[in-house]
Image (spheres, rainbow, N blue to C red):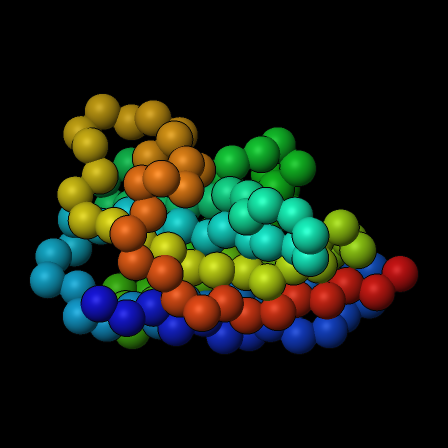
Length: 129
């Protein structure tokens, strides 16, 4: 399994970026794919996640309305569209995944780092004021 993030960069406050997580090696489509981020000196925090089983989850109210998940099954890619970016959104953004999310939905299945098995190397987002 490989996860490769791209799309990071530098933008000004209020700007937008679309991050991509290109996946390969998945042996099943019963998979949860999530985004986490880590700012310098801080712990890695959850952003959002998705699966065919449960749809999209956003791990904090601050992401609702500003961030949007989508996927392109033909390209095996999950996207995180980020708008109205703020300096506090600056971080390395990581894509993570695991197989067979449990049947009955809980946000933790996409927002709890302990569920994640596979990780990408991250893409840097910098938002200037």
